[in-house]
Length: 518
Image (cartoon, rainbow, N blue to C red; front, side, top):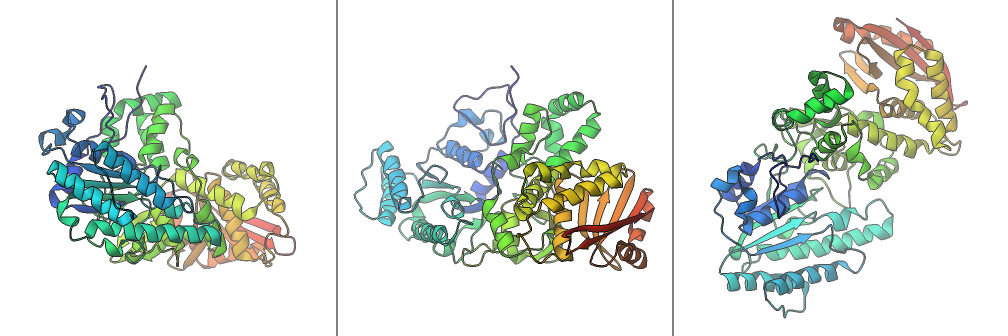
């Protein structure tokens, strides 16, 4: 039976030679060599827990697990006492968080033959670290995985749950402060904290302000996930098998995989990485699917976008300052920071301190926008709303009757009570969500030298330039496209260019008229 490839930092008790190992242990060695206190945030399913378990095996001196890897010949291979907190398994329901931490401390103490006498949580943590140092004569390693889970699990669920998130935040703030204590810090060999989000310094880390944040570090930008070179080097046989299964060339297969799963960028360095979870599932199943999104839906993020009435088409090409990457505070949640830190947006371009964000790949874009479409439209029937999946084929075939029949059917399924303000922005948003979630290569608010195009849909042989109007006329949309010279941006591509004006009626709550010209 052929084995599935594993992610970069997987070291089980028994290694098997027929697994694929992408060796990134140089990054780990570099961290150990340059510092002692680190923080790293990455979106879910990027291998954070695997990295933590790798660090644990390394500090426990299990050199046999690293046979054949770079660090096997370069590591110091001493055995250190390790204290590990995995917040995926530590209970953090209201009132249980402190007890969960205490149980974890006492379990670690028992496994090391230590008895904890202190009654309070902070003192118990300090007592354990000092006792481990005194017993072994070796400095202590502290590893904390998914530190923010006790907080983000309660977002978007109302004020009561928000208070629970704040209570857990305050417990964490006090608990982590132990690691900087004058008695504790000198006996620590290494501290590593990881999670999805980076809460502001004041919120969580004010008492542990000596952490080196490598989240946006160019040095470690490629530590998690696969680069294009790594994919082609280590997974060549899988790419060949994938191409054969789909009946396409290897070049075409690599392009499809890149469009679907590549595109994450975590620093100003112009290097993208693949989502490791999705690409491994694609090779395992030999099928393109939205694997990452299936593992969890961003309910709290959708709730926040709706609450703030966020202009969804403007998410693409969003321009933000570098400050946004650390603006994650329960008292002032910023959608832009959430979208980036949870992996729904990534860096596409950097000019000075200005960063342009966009969806990393097709998997994230179509899945996220489909989720938003159902949430924002609250359509009466999923069967009715799901007709939007046919839109790309209708438009590609220039079957405009079928295309607009489907569009009007979806708009008609939106409940009358949902939104009384049916203006151009509302219709633009729903139309944009339909097209993008359908899998079409659709881009909103496309900037030109003379204005912004409402929507551009591109195929291999043709481009649709679309302008929306509300309570005016479709002809006015065509006229604006011509007057602003929107087509000039695409003339040199050698594709057929279609101009389309769409007029919506706020009274009818639907498409009133459409026109097109070649």
